[in-house]
Length: 416
Image (cartoon, rainbow, N blue to C red; front, side):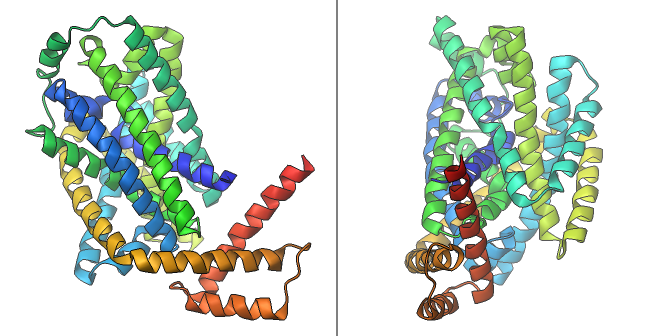
């Protein structure tokens, strides 16, 4: 597994955890408000993350997606594509300004700053980072993932070691919290839909940056497993710490603060980073969707992010309570569409994987000075590219860029 695949995995985790996990508030509303049974709902969500994560990144890779429309156009009818396209665009804006509001709430809880300061900082970071090339954006989004894994583990171990839980009392305490939805099964599928719709536009692009659909699927499953582990750790930790976190805007920050104030400070920065990750992916995806050139992309990114900053003044918890259930249902519809499409496309995906592997081998021969690239090899490359489901010039360029990166990485390692 090369550095690019690892970068995609960490970026995928970073995208998903900002909206559905980083603060911990989401798990309180969707699961722990049902008491102990909420833990079973969290376990079910973990399984879904592994399965669906692989499907989403594989579809993105299969269609070499540069935005969600590249996948939707291929897997469903024109009418459904338009509906889901509009839904994802609306989601990018709605969830985007929820993330900006969450960044303000995060720094307010830790430092007592006015919420607009944290929101403005998040807005500025989205604009600055969004101007970089995609590989750098993916690396930055993924940079906080190892940190959130480590700090979540620290909070979980500390809480579990210290706790002498009265499960019946915690179960009753959890049920005093206002639930996001009326029952646990509905809450479980709605929450998972919310997680996916918040990150799916960027997930398609991440998958599309990897030309081998088989590797993309493995990356999606590994990323999904990491999200599942994080979700489980946060869920159990918050359940055991319900007495101190039930009224907190950012519960996981409160947990780490109970370990040590310095840990709480560090966790506040990490949570801010995870919220930024999702906000970044949402506004980046929306800007890409409406941009034919790099210039229009940069202009749109600035305009969309500033609009999100303005809307963030409506407040974090209020926005979550109103918007998350609606977005969760839209996400569920999209997931069902994608699973059905993946089942239909499986034989085509398997065939395309074989073509991409051959293209990759021939392109390596073309680019590596130590290998011989014959006239016959060139003819084979052209023939396979023409047989691909992707336009031959586009797939050749995508494979060539990826092979060039791999060769550069290998040469760098040999030099070291």
